[in-house]
Length: 226
Figure 1 (cartoon, rainbow, N blue to C red):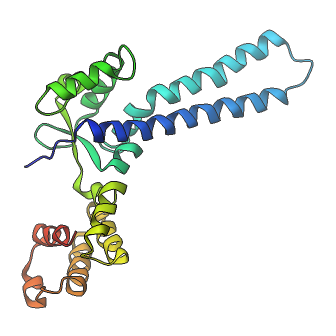
Figure 2 (cartoon, rainbow, N blue to C red; figure 1 turned 180 degrees about the vertical axis):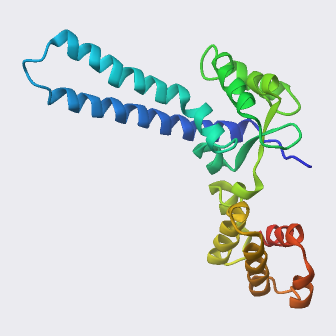
């Protein structure tokens, strides 16, 4: 399976998006806690309310910030919202979905990759290795690659295809959406849907030929439209 390795630019783009999301989530939790504390009875013990604030607000906010990456990568199978927007995904070196243990390992070592500040160690590793991996990826046996399904709808690549002028923007969005949802659709339905889309958007498509194509071939024809 051919893998297109994501470079430092894609990594940085995904990280910046994820950093803003997890920071905002943590701050929103803290703000909610502060509002709740203001409405506590005025006679409540100050020490007690301080301990409650620490346990119910400060600690959860820190956990939200720290666990954002490992939890979402496990739940979303190697993706995070930032990676999805950047059109990237974490996979094994063979291209498979990493195990939970591997995803947790790469995130535990994120602490080292982030040293001394701004992920200097991780960035140096990405620039020095052929597969553009950081220490966490080396230990977990993972690599960040371009996720063609998500890449079809990522902002940078989507804009590039619009400029190419081959498809109308609405048609481009339709094909990108179909590719993004491909794995979630019923095999029979997605094959029928793919043939319908190709017959309408691909000027050189022969309905007789489309009827003989299997799913991988239909998927490739959809990618060719982009």
